[in-house]
Every structure is written in C-alpha cells, then in structure tokens.
Length: 254
Length: 263
Image (cartoon, rainbow over all chains, first blue to last red; front, side, top):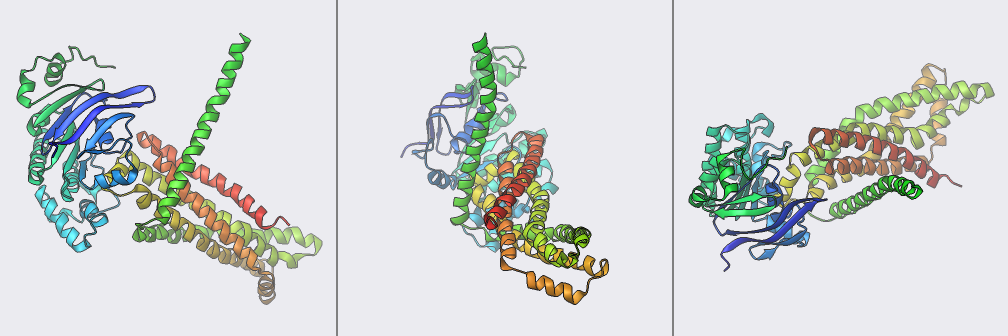
C-alpha cells in the first residue's frame, strides 16, 4: 500500500490572470498531520478547496488514496467526500438547523442513521469536544465563537472521516481558547487515526498540531520539514514568517 | 485614428454582449442542473414541505389582501365605464375574466416574488458567502438537491393553489362592491358569475401560477447561489432576484395569454 494518503503533483490554479497556485508538489502520509503555513492571500484556502474538489484545478494531479481528483466525474468526487471532514474558518454551521442536527447531518443524510440514534451519537461527539448536552437543541447563532468552532469540529469528526481539513482553526479566538481547540484537534485526529491537513498563519497552533510543516509562498511550496527543522532552518522566508518580521525577503503588498 | 475609434467602440459594444451571453449560458446550465437534480433521487420531501409552508401558507395574507382590492377596484371601474353604455350587467363577467385570467395570477406572482424571491436569494446567498454551501458539499450532500430542488418543486406546486384562492377572493371582492356599493341584486350577480365561468379561465390562471412559481424559485436560487463578496453581494442578489422575477413574470404573463387566446 502506498504510504501517502494524499499526493499532489504540479498543481496549478489561476483566477483570470491571477495565478494562485503555481506548480504545487506535496505529499501527506497516512495518519500524518501536515500544517501549511503562509501569509494571507497566498492560496492556502484554494489549495484545500482543490483537494476536496470544491474548486477545479487548472492542471496537475491530486491523488487521494491513489484516486485522481482533478477532472474526476462528479459522482466519484462525491463518493470521496464520504471519507473527508472539514472544519471551516467561520464554522459554516447551517443556521436553519439546531446544533445537534448540524453535528448529525452527515450521519442522517448519508449514513441513513435513524434520527434518535443520530442524536445520541451527536451528543456523544459534542461531549467529546467539551460541550454539554444542553447545547444540542440550541441554534448555532446562540453560541459564542469558540463554541461554534467546537460544534464545527464535532460536525467534521462525527462521520469518522479518514481525512480532516482544518481551515484556520484558531482564527478569531483568544489564545487560551485557541489552545483548547488545538488540543481538541490533536485528540480527535489521533483518536480517529485520521490524516489531517491544516492551513493557518497562527504559528503557536502550527507548532502544536503539526507532524510536518510546509510553507506556501507565491503559489509554491518553498519549504517543508518538521517543527524542529523549522526552528533550525536558515531559509530566510521561513525565518521571517515564523518570527513575524516586516523586514525580509517577503514583501507585504499593500 | 479612425481605425482606433472603430476598434474602441466595437470593444465597448462587445464587452456587455459577451458578458450577457456568458450570463445566459450560466443560467441555462443552472436550469439544466436544477431540473436534473429535481427529478433524480434522493428527494428531500421534508424540505419540500417546509418550502410549501413558506411560499404558500405564509403568503396567504398578502395574496388575499391584494386580490380582494383588485377585484373591488375592477368592479368599480367597470361600472363607471360601462354604465354610460347601459352595460352595467357586464360587471360580473368583467370581474370574473379580469381576476381569473390576469389579476389573480399576476398579483400572486408579484407578491410572492417580493416576499419569497428576496428571502430565497438572501438565504442561499448568505449560505454561499459563509461557506455553508461548501460545507454541504463536504458532507456529501448535493446543494442542488438539498437547496434548489425543494424550492423549485414547492414553487411550481403551490403558486397554482395560491392563484385559485386569489380567484375566489378577487371575485368575492367584486361581489362585495357590486352588492353593497353599486346596488346589484345578489342572486343575479352570482348567477351571471356562474353562467360565465369557463374552465379555460381557471386553466390559464393555474398555468400562469405554475410558470410564475418556477420563475420565482429559479431566480431566487440562481441569484443567491451565484452571489459573492459578503453582505453587499447578498444585497445585490436579493435585488436582482426580485427585479428579474418581476420582469419575467410580466413578460411570461403576456406570452401565456397570447398562447391561450390568439385565435
């Protein structure tokens, strides 16, 4: 069996004349937690959306479990979603549904689980992310930002996916809540034995949840390695980014 | 110099034309996809039920209010116009035809377009910009099946029913004015209404209702689905949904009337 869960080769994506991804090569091993770091607007979200087939890549190849995503028929991509989960940056909770219906959505709609069973399963997962059963019947809009993130996480892991994507999981949270979410991410990924791909620019979060880190800059992966290697690297781009300096090879386009 | 001017003016003409054709293509694709996913399983009947309530049941008050006043004003105008020819007796017939063929369908269509078309575009547009539609996809749920198909189905089913109710209320409005303000004999008025009632009058209203229902849901869903750019994008989507469906309703109203009554 191939040890890579996801293999990306020479992936490119442009919107009109704006090239966002410019020949990405990236491997994610089975059970590994990879964090892609990079500044705002460097195409991190586009990368994740291409892997999930939410956006069509222009060229290149993305293989998930050795199955090609780029140019695959819609049915095949839909089948692939059954083994993926995603925590969205803003939560993206369905505001017409209650909290437990959000968490149980995949279970009810796709795994045809009876409602009662799905609800008790949803409450179990909610407890796993540190939420009391009495939030189950609330509406997502009644929750705080941190609680919404937790519900989003619960929804992402409820179907026991093999691959989980995290889009800026700690953005907009205070440092303590960020750390709580980081712990939950580690727990749930390890608990499921899942492969995880996180995009973030929060270095504290990246250090904590990453087995491996890759840096995206100008549409290319310019560096990758472990957290230890990152701290020792003399790559000027990585050094500037992790230290948060305005001076250096990365010019902020204002 | 002249060549440059010609080239520039051609370019100015061409750009909106190309974007118009692009939009038309995008819309056709959206329609084809929506229809395909409406007729193929899985079906979300529970969601169709909720839309039937939203589009149909909760629109009853506005439909009742607009059609009753439409019927009343037609009775008044017909009387004032026709009495100079001694043709007051035609009031019942004119109210019947005007309400069933034109007023009830058009008022239902426009009122529901304002109420529901805007709400649909706003809801789906917000779901788009807050990534809820992407979330649906990652949960292996097709947004066309989950969001668009139930709304299209409900629109096509419930608008004809609303038109029927509008027919009854509109004719009742005419009756009230004729009896209590213009002094008609109730029995005669009811008799002439029933005698003049033809099934084609009801049929055309129902046909229009179904077409308008499709237009309202389609425009609401399409504009919401394609919206981008945060709150402003959603605002534009709702405006476009209401304007486009209102215009299309009036155009198709004419076309359908033409199809039924050309001979």
